[in-house]
Image (cartoon, rainbow, N blue to C red):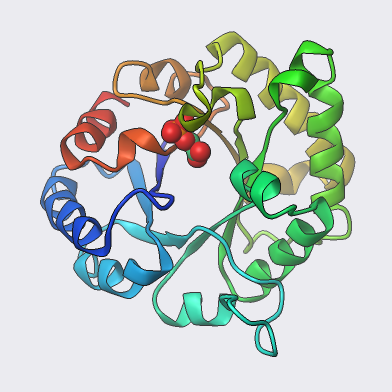
Length: 253
Ligand code: PGA
């Protein structure tokens, strides 16, 4: 099964650094086998230049977020329409850093998902429980609620693609994360699949949805996740901002 590897560069790199990492990766990407899909999510500042650097490669570009309206009086926001026009194909939505630092709600993420699909962009919906919720045995409840509130009322056809990224907040490296065990990720993908089965017709789920894992993924542990049958790839933060490390990670999947 083909695997997708999504790099979330967050706000780690300066513009100059983003360009130099991109130039190194574009060379590496020529040797990546066709069954691996690479997606880079740079900052908005570097977005257009990174698109240009990867233009003739098989690497796709994604945004780290978008706003839920296409145009209007929304100071500081970024439109899905513009991301699409500039050559973006994917958008990260509902990342735990946005939920935490900007109080993003499931309703906002629902609206952003809708505008992504309307503009032909592929949403990468991040869901995950925090340490407190995990400790209190609320993991499944939290994931089911996040998914239901984000996806309820979103109708899909087989031309749509949606990626669900299971990113336990406690596993993200910036939060001192410990990566989740492959057994846990395998269990969670079944919970996610069950929610999708409650919301959508069985026959469409495999065409539209992919489930991936994110949280302290490194070249050393990536294969543990990509080897899980129903896990279609990984979302990588810290280990994606250095070209050699990310290249090693891609090679190890
Ligand atoms: P990490 O980040 O790989 O640095 O843990 C993943 C993410 O936050 O998307």
